[in-house]
Picture (tube, rainbow, N blue to C red):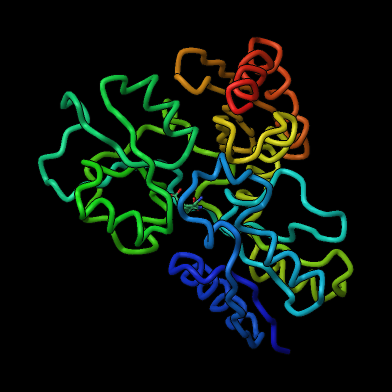
Length: 308
Ligand SMILES: NCc1[nH]cc(CCC(=O)O)c1CC(=O)O
C-alpha cells in the first residue's frame, strides 16, 4: 500500500521525509511525499516568539492528517508542540542524531572568545544561553530555513550562526562547523535531533503497528517521552528558553532540564535519574516541577511580563 507523507517543503524537511520514505520502502511500503507550506515558512520577518509558538511548523501537516489526505506527518521532533490534538498521536521517533548545537562560520579561524562577535540565532533559548555562557558575544536575528540563514551568514549579517548539528549534518554543511557547544552546558531543546512521526489516532491499528516497527527507535522514544513531559509541565513552546535532554545509560534514564531568563541572569537546572524506562513521563514531570519550584515560576512570569 502507498503511505502518503505530509511534510514541510524546506530542504531539511524534505531530506528527513525522504529518509522516512526510504525506511518505509525497506519495510515493503510504497510512499508518496506531499509537501506543504506552514505558517512558520510563510512568515519570515518576525521571530518565532512573536508569531507565537503554537505549532507554526506543524499545524498545516496536522490538518492534512485530520482530513485523511495523508497517513503520516514527518516533523523535526523539536518543532512538535508539547500537547497535540486528541484526534492525533505521535506514533514513532526516529533514532536521534548527535544532539549538540554548533557554531558555523565561513572564517576558518573563527573563535568564540573574540570580543564583539555577532552570532546569528532566532531561538530564545540560544540567545539566553549565549548571554549566560558567552556574555561578550552579541546576537542578531536569523530567521528562515537553513539555506536562508546560511545566505545571511555569507552576506556578513553576522560572524557566525548557531544551529542544531542535526540539521547541519543532514544538509551537508559540517565543513562550516567551527565549534561544538557542550550539551551538558548548552543543553539543547526538547526533541532536538530526532524526527517525530504523527498519525491520526483512528488509523488502522495493524497498520500503525507495522509503521511503528519500521520507523521507531525505542531508546529515542523513551528519551523523547521524558523530554516532552518536561516541556508540557513547563507550559512552554519553542518560544520559552527552556531546555531538556534525556539520555539512557544502561537502562537508567537521566533527564537534565531547566530554564533561563531572557537576559541569561537567572538559571535553574535539575538533573534526575530513574531506574526504569516506564517512569519516563513521571521523570519529565518531576524535573519540571523541581525547576518551577526553585525559581522557574518567577522566570516564566517575568518572560510573560516582558512579552506583554
Ligand atoms: N526550529 C527549526 C529547526 N527544527 C529542527 C532543526 C534542526 C534539526 C533537529 O533538531 O532535528 C531546526 C534548525 C535548527 O535549530 O538549527
